[in-house]
Image 1 (tube, rainbow, N blue to C red):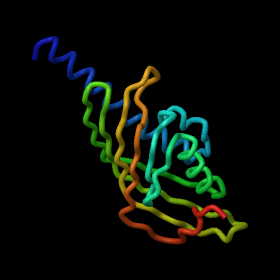
Image 2: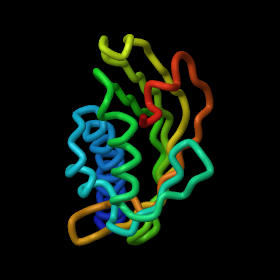
Image 3: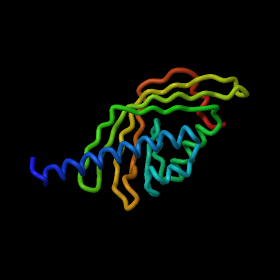
Length: 152
């Protein structure tokens, strides 16, 4: 492998890891209820379908849906893995599996709702790094009390 090939491989690996890091930043922001950190995940005009047929328009709408569902909980834990990234210049696709646990507060009777599924993202390189332009959450299975994450 010559130096140009090595350089190309290096840049691809760096981009792939940066994209995976963006997906992981999303999970930490959700689980810590740190909604401002989603500015480092989504472009301002991002769109998303988060487990239903409703397309959310704009980062603020995405943050509103996430915070409305997760802020009332005692805790949540979003785990992602099996990342697959394809970079094409300044755009990319990313997909990964997820498992998420949502724990209700004692005041609300406790309870647990678990979700298994996958995220499929269209990503774009910005001056501040890779960001999600569109995210689809496909729910593959659930268990427990879904009402825990339905805003009252």
